[in-house]
Amino acid sequence: MTAGARPDLPRRPLARLSIIIVSRHRPARLASCLTALSQQNHPEFEIILVADPASLAVRPDLALKRIPFDEANISAARNAGIAAAAGEVIAFIDDDALAVPSWAGRLAAAFADPEVVAATGTTRGPDGFRWQVRAERIGRDGLAYPLDVAGPVSLAPKAGDPVSTIGTNCAFRATALRAIGGFDPAFRYHLDESDVNRRMAARFPEALTAILPAAEVVHGAAAGPSRASSGVPSDLRQIGRSTALFIRRSGGTMPDLVAIQRKRLLRLMVAGRLDPFALGPLLAGLEQGLADGQAEDLPPPPAGALPENGTPFLRFAGDFPPADPVVLSGWQWRAGALRQEAARHLAGGRVSCLILWSPTGLRPRLRLASGGWWELQCGRWALAGRAFRGQGDLPLARSAHLAISCRLSSGLRD
Image 1: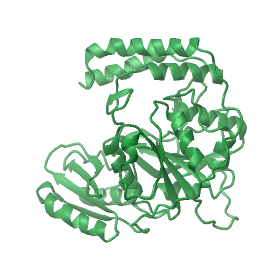
Image 2 (image 1 turned 180 degrees about the vertical axis):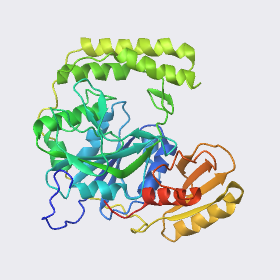
Image 3 (image 1 turned 45 degrees about the vertical axis):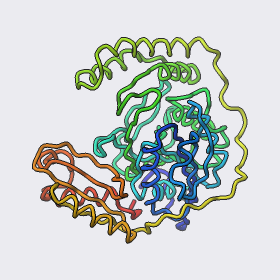
Image 4 (image 1 turned 30 degrees about the vertical axis):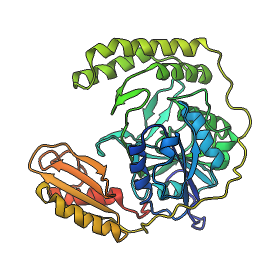
């Protein structure tokens, strides 16, 4: 039985959810994120878009709370979203992330347990398969360490270390998040959610954080102020600064962050993704950020609770009732006909996924097509024995069907 489970309690309706998206100058990514959220099966959620003026104009057909914000401070932007949130639970997703159809419902369901104050799912990388973040705790040194979690579980802090909730896939009980003052604008980028985790653990030391492996998002890691392309940094100063501030506040020991980042950059360089001449400037920027974070006055954590929201709940009307997805598959040369079929199912209110095979070793990549269906493109030989491990001895095509159906299923089977 999962920690904190209460089998004697009657089943409650799913909590109303406020989903906050912060977006800055990435309108195409934002449009895809909103399309994925339009396929959520949860019946009671609203979307709060905190964005630059151009991004606020994306998808004018959707009923969103739209808040203008165009500063490079993720924490301040999220607090602007919290101020407009009317749900009992407040969730966060990045504008370059795609939520599977059951994501919102699974997060909301975790809060039926009154001891749960936070929840997090699992996050895959841009290809839709490799893990980016699974289950972790965050230490006083600002580094996350893994947890061995086989299924959904709710955990309290251990030795002061809370479960880590990555900012692109997390939710908080609104009263608890407001009670600690929301996010700290001192953390403009990096460790902003980790600071929330530690302050919430200090305020509610016995409260639980739910880990929900099936609440998945695919995180695109798109280019931004500190990142040139998927997973390739362009500036490490804010990472250095935030780490220094975090450790000063938590009382942790400073890790050898330069060595950690150098190892990461060397991997990117060997893979041909990072210009070797960029290595020195990136590490110099990191050291400058560390120095800045050590030298500046340590700001106190947010004092006092954030005010209650005065804005009415704006229910988002999705077009996809709970139902298992339609999964289609075929060879790449049948893509046109299969995409037309996927579009027909989508128009009929069924979430659709298309698997396109090629007789190659092409690595798998799961994306949300512009037409609104999920599309997996992969080589017939790339998947054998790798991408669908755990599916037993099923034939490859059937194994792929099963894996995709389970991941995109709208049913709350947990």
